[in-house]
Length: 359
Ligand code: SAH
Image 1 (cartoon, rainbow, N blue to C red):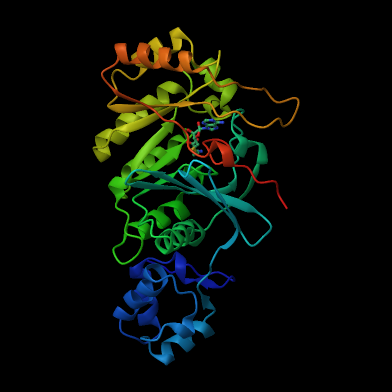
Image 2 (cartoon, rainbow, N blue to C red):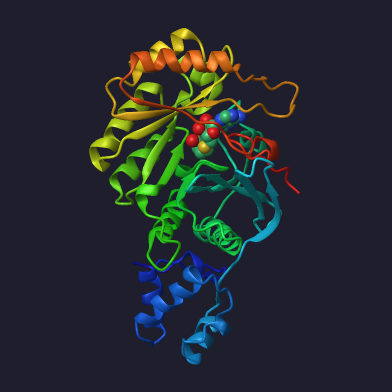
């Protein structure tokens, strides 16, 4: 194991407990000092080395001299949904970029939707984040800190701990693999946020090499694949990544994930009026997923504010059409089908609505 060393300062927030232990040993201290550091950073949210009172002064000084620090995201804005079911947190990345996390409150479940990148390179035609283009990858520390900060504010408001984490915010998590998986390891550790892998889901637009890698890693998290269409022709029109990896590739990858991880993949399917919500689509979706152990989440499209006049405009199907699609699908499949109503549409915090104009 090597410690990340770069000309930039060493961010302790992005290091695993074993890396912190190694760092302590390199500085001539006992290994357990690394665990204490982890508890300060991830358990208590401390960012000031000086304040870590149970660490020897010598170690605090050596860390500071080595350029170690603990970063903290800058919270720019918070928006509470009028429904009381969603809160959006807007953070600055320190370089003029902005990204968002969304807390979704649903009974006893408190799910935090995390961003993995500022913007996204995949350019899906129906998604607001795609319109931003790619700005930059978030670091492991920046991914974890979204959770630490929301945790802290939820605790202060008596809301209780975050119970579930989904990597479904801005960005394609599997294109920022190392930072995302380090963050998900950090999040799972006891003494830190301690959200277990059973309650973490990574969502991908279908970056196949990333899916295979995740299947082979022992990260123990759930996988969601944004399928969104039942023919390659339609999918290619919506998601350029389909030119490289097709629906058949994704079905095979989902099976591979199940074989390796023992967990059913969730297929997300966005209902776009007249594009993906036809009777034939419902039938094909049932057929495509018949041989793959999976669950299906239907997401009625959240319409975007007008943007580029050249860009295609998509519509949300009406209630009746959504219900008809669901019924038709359910009558043809043994898979669990859920209709996922996005929360927080009133604060632009619903699926596909995360967009920040570069400042
Ligand atoms: N890049 C990853 C993570 C983002 S998750 C992925 O594509 O899976 C965002 C989810 O919201 C995806 O399933 C996407 O298909 C869906 N989505 C995007 N724009 C949407 C919109 N306007 N309305 C509803 N769902 C949308």
